[in-house]
Image 1 (tube, rainbow, N blue to C red):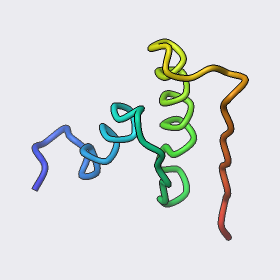
Image 2 (cartoon, rainbow, N blue to C red):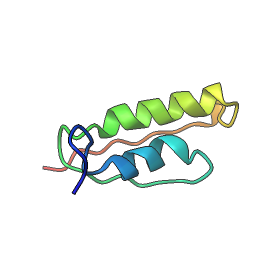
Image 3 (cartoon, one colour):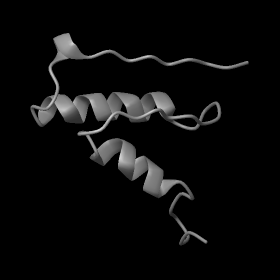
Image 4 (cartoon, rainbow, N blue to C red):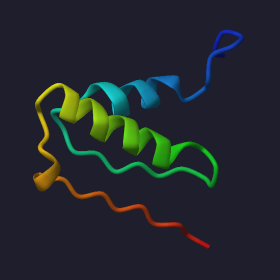
Length: 64
């Protein structure tokens, strides 16, 4: 059980934000923070010099 104040999926969130050297597919429910995580990951990759804006693509698909 996660400690109080931590998210149950914190390890997955850390992977999304920290492992800029791998490609990921993120699947989660509406309102879970996928788009925010994607934006943070892309920004972090640019700041670290790993990504160039011209070489980036992002796809966000909402399922009904």
